[in-house]
Amino acid sequence: PPDVETLGRGTWTLLHSIAASYPESPSTSQQSDLLSFVKLFSKLYPCWVCAEDFKTYLGKEVPRVGSGDEFGKWLCGAHNDVNRKLGKPEFDCSRWQERWRTGWKD
Ligand code: FAD
Image 1 (spheres, rainbow, N blue to C red):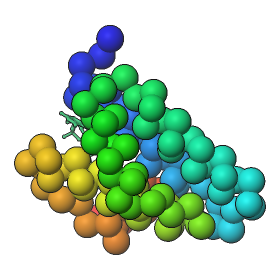
Image 2 (spheres, rainbow, N blue to C red; image 1 turned 120 degrees about the vertical axis):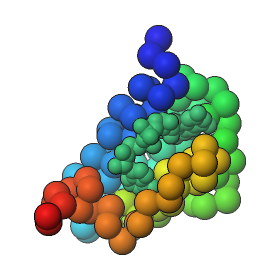
Image 3 (cartoon, rainbow, N blue to C red; image 1 turned 180 degrees about the vertical axis):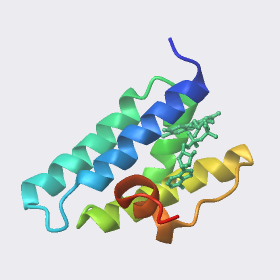
Image 4 (tube, rainbow, N blue to C red; image 1 turned 180 degrees about the horizontal axis):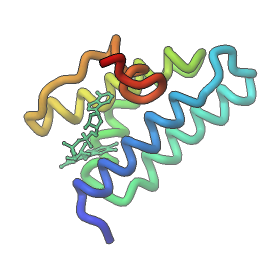
């Protein structure tokens, strides 16, 4: 199996990419699908200590699935929670779309 870092980088790429392609006005079923996905993800993520902490975070900060930007910012907050825990710099969540959707301007 991949190490925790390689798994993490690939997984964040997938999760932020899902946020970037999620509609601005999702239907009720798209919203419930995303919520189910996040909850199932937290049970299946194959780094068990990571998954436990992520489940705790889900309990404190309910995923916001009302639009792509809302979910992208929620996910950025979840990623920052892990960054803090690991002593990595926090990411400026007002710029998540530049990193994951539209590309940096410079
Ligand atoms: P990563 O954190 O993997 O980030 C990849 C890229 O995303 C960065 O280069 C940056 O451009 C961008 N980015 C950074 N922060 C944000 C943000 N807040 N919002 C948007 N984009 C951002 N590892 C552990 O050792 N212990 C854990 O408990 C743990 N829990 C995890 C829980 C989850 C749900 C996931 C997906 C991963 C977890 N990891 C954990 C892995 C860890 O988060 C990193 O993926 C890993 O350490 C590699 O880090 P990295 O420095 O390459 O960048």
